[in-house]
Image (cartoon, rainbow, N blue to C red; front, side, top):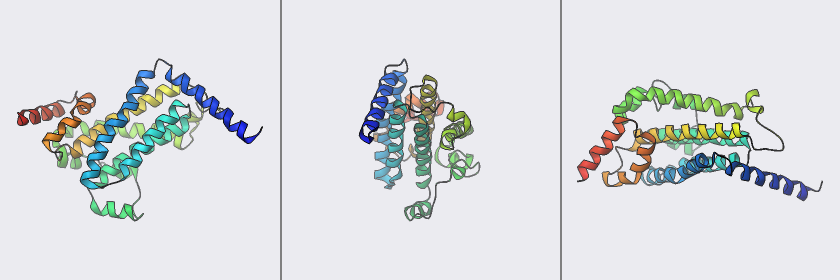
Amino acid sequence: MDCTDLYLKINHNLQENIQASLSSSHYTLFANANAFIDDYGLWQKWIAEKYGIEIFSLALSEYETALLFAVQSLYKQAFSSLRAYLEHTLFGIQLTTNLLQYLNWKQDAQDVYWSQIVDLDSGLFSSNYTSAFFSELCASSKLILDLAKRVYRECSQFTHGNYSAWEVIKYPPVYDEKAFVKFLDEAESIKYIIEYSFFIRFIKEIPEEKITDFESQIRESLGHLKEVTDYLSMINEDEK
């Protein structure tokens, strides 16, 4: 087959997968996942203005890529990008707490280590860290740590090519409802982890008059946490 014809045929197949994905009963879940691009962008913009750290734009690009791969039924690539999005975001938050790490990272002398991010004593979900930035949520941080570890492990099945992941990988790529739903479930879990992590690290640094920009998405993701709603209500009272 001619090279041009081959890739046009692949492109046609991927277009059919997009149609199948977006016409499925899971369209609303995908649309919600896509809507988080704008919510994440609000955090990214504020962090860039405050700290000038660029990695969040890379993380968001990975998320957009993950969604594009998923809707085309390229599930291995989708889960790999989803993992990178989670890892880069949490690493970026870590960099805002350590200027030396950030400068080393810019000079390629600091790598991204998942083990440091989830370290029980000094990681982003440790009691030491949470106590420093938003002590009111110390009681729930272990649950988020466990969730982050589980999601990272699930996504890594595809990154490392484990057998269970290969079962849903087909060539040519074909829409698989089970794989698509699994991707959307993991994306929703990561959204929760990221909103939680952004809130703990930055909410007390954001000027009170700007918190309203974030309040809707925070309440949507974290509104079940009394400590979060109490803090937002207190801010609202202070502004009256």
